[in-house]
Image (tube, rainbow, N blue to C red; front, side, top):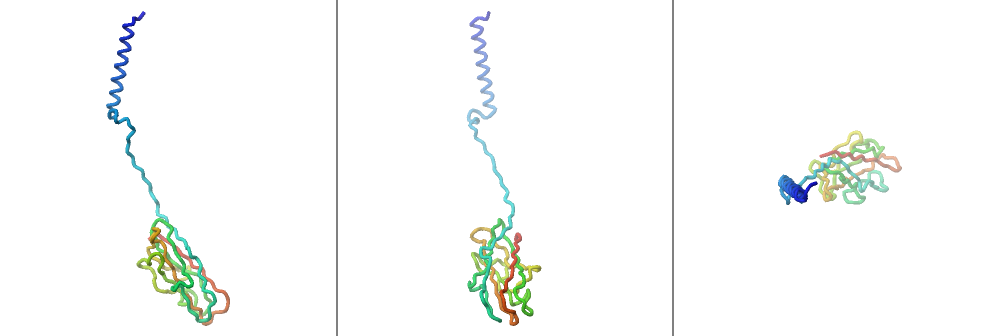
Length: 185
């Protein structure tokens, strides 16, 4: 049989070993203050370049016009196209359009159908076409709006359109589809 003295001695040895073991572990992890869970890390994210545009104003109606009559959107009546950069990078925008007129010499490009970058939220970027210029065909688009920003306070410009009804244009409704293509600036 084990005496009470031996049993008490064994318990004392186990307690001493436990305290020494805990102290050694705490010193390895930086002391008692190191056990607070304090840690420093970093978070990282990568935003890819996104090219996206929209047309808040996507149609222009010049109404009824007579032979040789001239009208454009530079005076705000009718309103010009509004081109908005919805992406995450600055963009360059080309335009081209289907023919509006059937009159002699009036197919694109001609002075009977013109475009220009106009004022909007911001001025047109350097390299933009800022005076009325012959509208190119859809198959041969040209740079119209250069370096349109992507921040909300600088992401929208106008594209003005000018039309002149050719002298030999037949009567009827006329229309054209303008194609806007954006690429990263």
